[in-house]
Length: 587
Image (cartoon, rainbow, N blue to C red; front, side, top):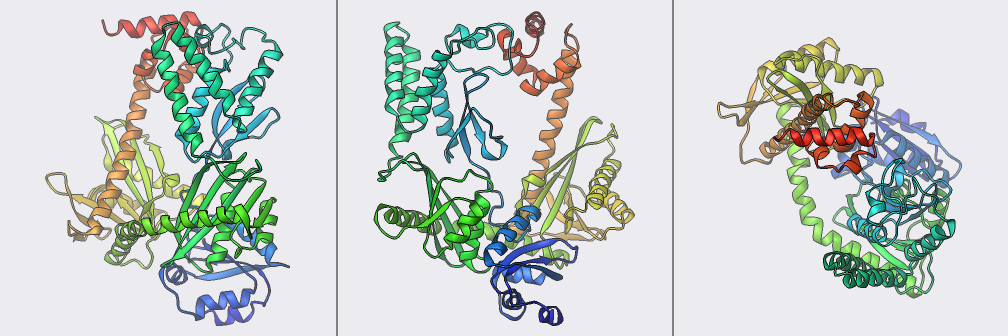
């Protein structure tokens, strides 16, 4: 296999890319010796995902580099650019939340995710916080103790926060800079590890509420302080310096890798992350890939301690930070503790992982065999929804290798405003796959419809008109509206054992597309009804109506909002009229 192509590959470092029959990159790797590595794929024996990947390779390409370091950096950039399906390391991973302090134009605290952060002067980041709830509790406590800016926008009048002494009225009043500087000094000192300053401030305020017989506020504040203190008590690490660092180690067993990361900031452990995934090739290279990709989604600390088997020089260059091995002392003990956590996670979760594979990957493979497909990786699932012919919408959910891929979900507002399932399906499929052809994006191996013969005929007409060769199947319901059969594009009906993993897999896909589509339909319907109500209020033009719909999303939530809150978006007089109108609707 590929004998002639392999004969031309040089014994040099570089990155290689595996392509499938649709000219899509399905895997990116790097090698110290390209010829040896590529030959190993086609001459050696493989198992698991590597075997599956090799079976899909139509051809390969490679890029020669001068050094292995250059190959590594190129590989990471290509993985980030093409997101190949078999480079699974960061699939479904999200960036972690951070606490951001904004100095100007007004002092403010907020929770942000690193990918959405635009670094600017006067803004400081603290984190990451694996426990988002804890981060929000810390921000809530600081907001209660200090009169930071809390409202959105720049209202022309003093808002509710000012009147309850939780804001200095920045939008209206000129606040002395010394007052802001003193408050900022306390907050930054706390976020940098000086916890006593906030504890004392909170106890002082609790006492003030108690003296004023405001016991409910005192108790509420005490609960928040107790929670934050319990979180901070778990963060002690026996390191004498206050350096920002991450500690990374791993465990490998039964064809799986478990990676654990400790996040240490200002000498305190903020939390940890664990990731388990199957080995595709050299597991040390897999781990190095994961680390490099992880820090493209999260802020890089000043120091990263890694296992001595990992190439610290390659990682240092790729991450532009200090990557070190821990040989002895407290850092070495900390590294061993991280390895223990990785090992425990792998042992605890291994059975769950295998069970999940049986429900997903194995069920997906059973569906592939049942429909006679060579490959079944991506499934596009469609459903339509309308209410008496109005607000017709379609939803598409995507399953990859048996698992939902939520970043690929799509919503469609159908132009046909009547109960016409056949033409609705034609419209959504034409729009979806014409765009796919124009943009040359990933195509599915199977189109699954939440309906039988009528929808399959509509789908087949569109797919053939676009000259596509994609398998189509439909989920057929009985007279009790229960799915009990599968129908293929030739109208062959296939019975499915209701006790099988395959039946439950099909049901999960059907439930997911139905949930997604119905939720979108309700949103469309709700926004339509909101818009109708808001049109009755004098002074609410299209721009103001859109702002209210975006913020509140429903008539109920607009009604629950105070006049002060509504006034942050619309003039106070209009807000008062809207408030009175909504309350009069009940009478």
